[in-house]
Figure 1 (tube, rainbow, N blue to C red):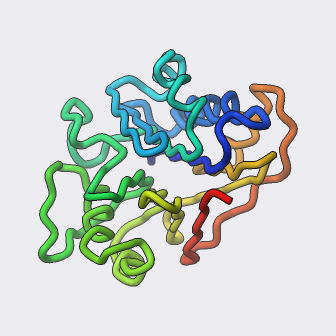
Figure 2 (figure 1 turned 120 degrees about the horizontal axis):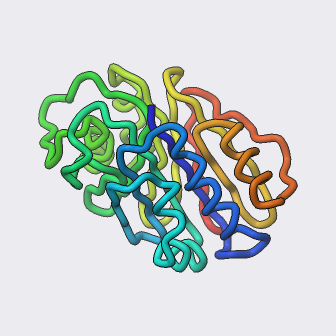
Figure 3 (figure 1 turned 60 degrees about the horizontal axis):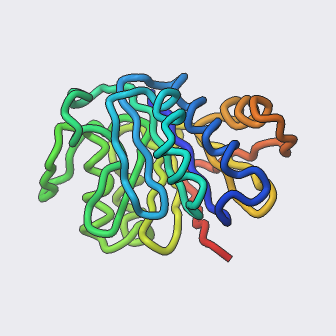
Length: 211
């Protein structure tokens, strides 16, 4: 059980910075073995939990300017968090991915650079040439998944019935996280009033991009 969060918007407009930092901190309730984030293509990994990494001045600076953010709080099941390659985000070519869930079987022809099952997903996407192209193969994988993937132009979300995912529109941005409670608690923590989070539908592919 890992925690993921994501954001697409316009930098720090509408209190986005404080909400994103709170979301990144709150996802640690789902895993404290390691954490990491992607901010406008910059990938940072840490063996510290996300609630600690969220306090870093470097994290705050990266989040403040970013129009696209993904965060991950790891509960390690495959691969030691002491080996940074096993931690999220995972990168293959232009694709950057965070994942909550467990992938049980590696497809034939996929070569991994880590011991983490989540890397399978970004390698499948890279091999197919995109998230849309990899959709069928991903949904046929044995296991549970909720993923956020950045391809340099769009932020994609996909889940099956094994892993949750929610999002809310606030101000000029879209904010996503593993659970509705994480989103609501993060907003309450920073004094923002937001709407009721919506649940991502299992099997539906969502695409978010800057307007």
